[in-house]
Image 1 (cartoon, rainbow, N blue to C red):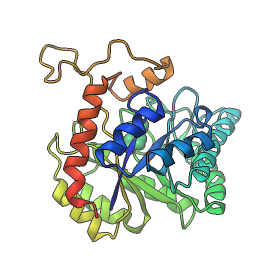
Image 2 (image 1 turned 135 degrees about the vertical axis):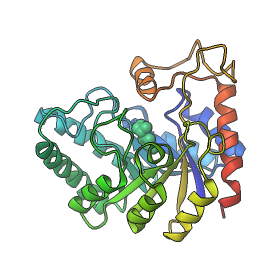
Image 3 (image 1 turned 180 degrees about the horizontal axis):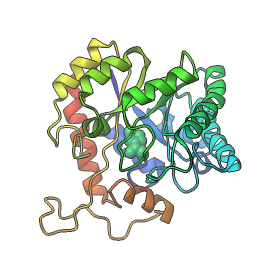
Image 4 (image 1 turned 45 degrees about the vertical axis):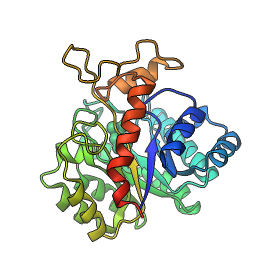
Length: 295
Ligand code: LER
Ligand code: MN
């Protein structure tokens, strides 16, 4: 088992992220789904410089990005976004695309359930053609009901993956499973060999180990189903603007390079801009908690 970390949770240069995580012992990054922001040859140079591998990428379904949109042109542009993202992953030698079909923060459907299902299958199938031809794996990711109304549970992600094709996979995320699953361990077993990626954060979406999830059981269940790939750290700390905040220096009041779209994306996750100090602490706590399980 190896360890990756996402980089969408704090707006900073890729180099500062790579410098931090390589210094803390991470070996992989799940690069944020922003193909428009990255030149793959420059990224490859930075990955080489800091000896970090690209594990894959996660869709950033913000603004109009929505595979379930009623407007066919919007769906087409959304599919193209994921294809561009898959091309970036292929260029960087990555393996997986964590795919969230609908816009994050959109909790009101655009159309009838059967229409949206058809559009989802159609759109993911088009992306699947590319991933199959380029040795990549799609992991359809269930996320909680406050971020989407569409795929919230492993069983739903499995149904969509099965409708798309034999090599279409599922990405599970401990934070979302803790909210939406009756039994996250049963879900992990049910997804089984279709599990292609595993996002980790605690129940409070702080670093693994900072909440109440049973990491020993999570890791033993991964072993039981034969998942021995990458644990991909994706904490996204809740905003605490009160005097009760145990981390008084956590909120970055003057973030640099944070677009309004990125800030909204963080807010749609119940989070906000956080300081380097706080983010580094979370990054450190994550690998400290998971290190015993890495080979
Ligand atoms: C994506 O991996 C995720 O976990 C969701 O919160 C959507 O960003
Ligand atoms: Mn996730």
